[in-house]
Image 1 (cartoon, one colour):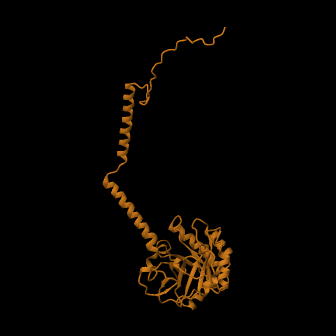
Image 2 (tube, one colour):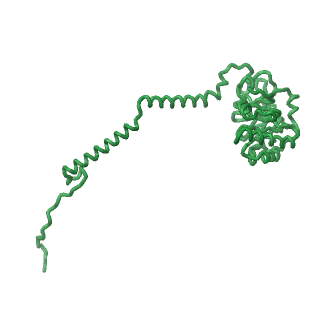
Image 3 (cartoon, rainbow, N blue to C red):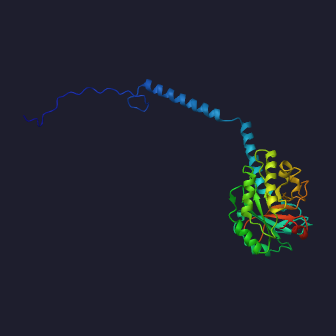
Length: 305
């Protein structure tokens, strides 16, 4: 039977309103809208409460802001002003190496490590600044019981060839056996006739002052027995006073670091004074530690092999 053109007489069910909790729904009821608004108001009140909790009183805000500004100023002072303050002080010595070199001394030197990068040692040896020149160079050889400075061999070979008096130093690590450190330095420093006697750089306290002193004496004794001389101890004036003021250690020659002072503030007699870490030396691209020897050339000969 053909159904073409026959009307569909099936009746559809009447549409019902769709309930929705959304206030934007076309089918939402007044009750739905009211509930939605109530929930929205609760959320807004909660956010306001949290925001109010996060807000601090004016006095606290300005206190924190003031502390932050003070912190920034102290940081700027420490980083920018302190390292350069010597440039604004009256100079009672002579200008050389972009420093004010104290009067009363005649022998000057530098100490270097891989930090200084490639050094043109001929330029270092030939430098003459206002009548001042570099006489000696002390070069980092080793650290702890396993680390050898990557540029030590090249530095000491080229510095010797340039005619400078050379020395080698070991950076002491309290966490490593003193015997292991001493033997490692002896093996790698290869000190020769004419070199300065060995140097140990002591800057770390370790577990305790007592342990540091005891093990450092062991380390120095091993070097002394091997080389036949008392090694030089390098340290800062403060570190010497706090941790190395010991009757046995006081017998060793002292190389003291105390920057831009009229004299190093130590009771012990010193043979070398690290006066600055910001000298400008020909042949070296970065700032370099500058040292003053306490005596004459005859005195310098006494601390050479």
